[in-house]
Length: 351
Length: 281
Image (tube, rainbow over all chains, first blue to last red; front, side):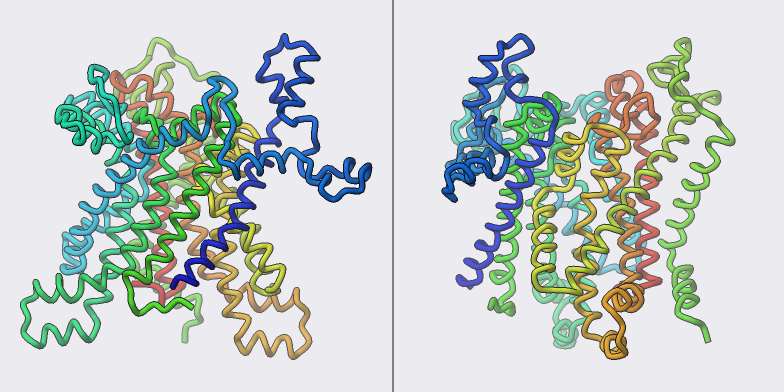
């Protein structure tokens, strides 16, 4: 198991290396001179030159063939923009925003809790809907209820998430005034967070009013973001349950005269959960990194919204650093999900 | 005796989701084809400020938007854009992904390592982020949105095809073809590819659904089709600003997206029942 885990994580290195190459190439394919963008149109040629040198923009992109030919030193070959870039990200330095000058790594750290909280909220809502619905649909296969659940699941995966978000805002915020339409806290609420996870922080500080306010803000975006995983998990739960219910040990349990409730919840459910747990894990990674549309609609101050704003403003260090960060989180979560199979399913032997 | 295609056809028409999907997709395709004939439309000139923000009525069944444009006509013409984006994007992904998967699976070794590495890199990005990043580089437009949404789907087809080739490579008919002296090209395109076609068709149908959703998301973010094009995602985004006063502007394009995506999802499920009976449940 440990050997497999180590191999699985070592396997991430070439992928992450490729990701860094791709992101670097992408950002440098964008037309325009970053030095000019940073200094503005009226910058003097000297100032431009100085900044270009400071940013290593005067070096070649990938391999410094010229320096290699001049010196004959193989190390000179790596005196390039990409090498500088890679060296910096390995030290955890993702650079600074062109416009606001904030440190990209620090800002990512500050915004990650908001995205994490939204992901957990969305996943909880998805599980609360999907697990009971999927189990009940499997038990009453081909009933009206089953058809309703399956139709609902199909509609759930077919609905554009940004449109569902708008509908939720219209119905619950604009029309019914039950819930706030955007943000994480009301403007009248003043609160100094500890970890950045507002639900946790408010309890730590004993501020029940803040807890309720944060929870109310969390409901609508979680519902919107959770809709697709809810649909996928419900379908998975149903088909997995149906498969398990045809197994011999379920028939044995029934033959022993166990009540149907015990057969289903003690014997069948445990085994039916295995593939569901995998899907939940993979979706957790997706939600954690893919909430751009939801965060934009609900004005949620997480990573997705920040990245989208940076793309609109052409703030490349943020785009570069944010994309790298997201891809990194995504592949690591997926690797962890991979490894967790063994924890939940003792039959799996890692070689 | 029926041949396999007739059997698949009869299985398809026994599946209710397949029939429903075919009906919905057929409806959208027909609407898209007939739109320029029955309701010629020039989005650049359509303006009627006296009819601004009117709710649905007999005259305007889906109401009008902030420029007094009839939403029904725009949603109708939007079908042309969304279907084209979905099909072109998936066509691109299907061709490139299938070729990559074929080569990786068939040749193995270093070719496989290189292609699998590229695929893993693409899969390291959440799909919408990758699409957004591609458009950020090549610029927002409907053509670029097609490319972005298509590139995002390449790994899906490459992985599918690769795993199929790996199992087909071991079959006796491939060994027989090789023994008869068939070259790589002939073995790949005459023996391996046709036998892997069914799952590809199913996946392509389901991918069109995803592509339509992704392209609408790009349009909504201002990174896909540009106004005044009657693209559904763009229409929802424009309606967002008038949402409290005139919710119908965003409501109907969204319904259209949902129905079209639902149609392709149902059609894909039905095709799976028909072409791949073992995987069906």
